[in-house]
Image 1: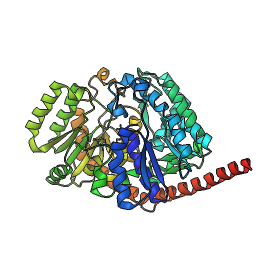
Image 2 (image 1 turned 90 degrees about the vertical axis):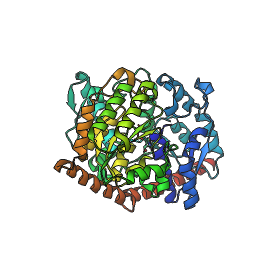
Image 3 (image 1 turned 135 degrees about the horizontal axis):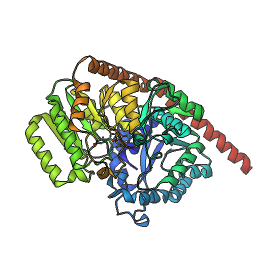
Image 4 (image 1 turned 180 degrees about the vertical axis):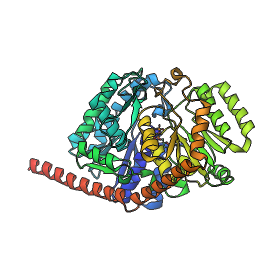
Length: 484
Ligand code: UDP
């Protein structure tokens, strides 16, 4: 339960309902409140069958503060174990709800962090479909690194080539996601369960599209067979400004004010900066970022996440107010949640400084905007290589190591203001390289749109719905035959 997983899940629900499925999104009460504007408006406008079903989250039983239903509001990373314990306690109530459900469910589409949905699906004799939120490229990188163990002979900062890929991709051990580099909280058992559940799943739904990463989709299918459906970019189901503005959380800025500010700048001139929903950089690192944006001399939006413990630091706040004074109208600081999709789709935005979360990456692609890539943790370094090396639509700030989520204080300053300024210039300068990136980004945006509007992703959603109908009929018949 975090925006990077919930938002695409709801978008996927919308797409499935457009293809005739009846969709129920099971979540907890506070998450249901956050997601309600995405779902209610959609079902009211379209008359489609999609709804939210909240079930109680056992905070107290797991030793969590009341209301702690989302990773973004977890007061400390040390409570992640409690958080996942509470998530596990949902197994029984969910099973009970699904047993009594009318009409009975035909399949469960499950986030990867709920591996126990395999058991529920098996008891109810329905297929469990995995949605893990990553690209095929990331999956193949992880798989090949894991199988070859290539990282084991390397020191933290030595580069190695990821074996068996169609592209030459170099990484260091320090940049790899947590299965290769454990943080202070040990979640090894959960990870093992996730891997087992992945194998036991009937198929995978992937938020990507064939033309974006054809060779990697094929590689994925080599592991999982033909039950891999690339149905994205799912965010493209949001067409109107209202759908684009209400995603995942309430905006901390008036949308009209934001659009007015954007409208005051020429096309492709603004740098939009947002490092996702989970990161909280230290005050010195944030100051380097802000100073880099200031040094570009270009208009910028900077989303400073409210959940960041250190961004609420008094000294930093004072510094940020001084920055606003210096840059005046040129800089728009958003303290909290930004209407990211709405901003990205505005013609004034010319570059996206992103942490390379997969949803943000796809949203940048859909907007046809080249990116300044600043990966932080998880599979974000894979996504950075994908943006810069495979697609050629971005420049890297040169982050050399992953920050462990919740351990940002230990990392120190990894990216300097000059790194930010230089990479932003590479993307925004309007020179040959930057224009080439922009053209490629715009071509990809058109391809993404085509994929959803009748192209490969449209056809794969259709095929998925048909497949689930068939398999659930078959499984039902088997149960009937056994009963007779
Ligand atoms: N998001 C947003 N406003 C914000 C921060 C994030 O709308 O201020 C959305 C963003 O558009 C994306 C999701 O939250 O859909 C973040 O997912 P991503 O995979 O990019 O990164 P994560 O937050 O999971 O690290």
